[in-house]
Image (tube, rainbow, N blue to C red; front, side, top):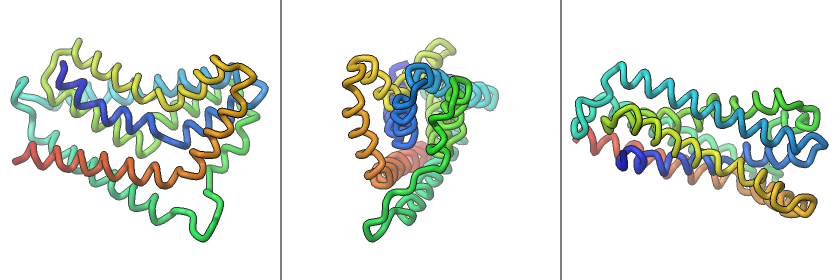
Length: 225
């Protein structure tokens, strides 16, 4: 089980360090329904990560991701290489689309409508950003495949997946924790966090995707060798 947990640590941190979901939560908390919508978003986020990870684990188990604790299946290493290359492509797209010449960073248009969200829509957005977002989906598939490849039992897989989900929730969960801890005083702190994340979104995402993409490719090549 230790090997499974160790395999998901960098991938869970990669999910957590996603600027767009963090910015979305900060914007939600600034609305009149923020105290409800923020936790609803987190609930959807957790459900999305857990559901995507569980589906991949079940598929991997059915496809024979491991022939034993020390005999991981070859196809999982191929999947890791493919996922890593996908992340490297996303990193390149992020860098090529970076703001130039003092341009303001572009954020998704739907963020302008967050003040109209109810709890259901906030939860749905959490599911979309955690499980359907291409970067997070690639990381979740990579984490679940890495867990299945270790050959641990169902209980160990569940624990490792739970660790991944908890780590992946730390990023969007931070603004909610700050809001609960500081109350009205959190507005200044959260606005500073939002501004910093907005300004450095491209750099954060590019470095993150590059590092994890290279790791997955390297792990896959090492496994095949």
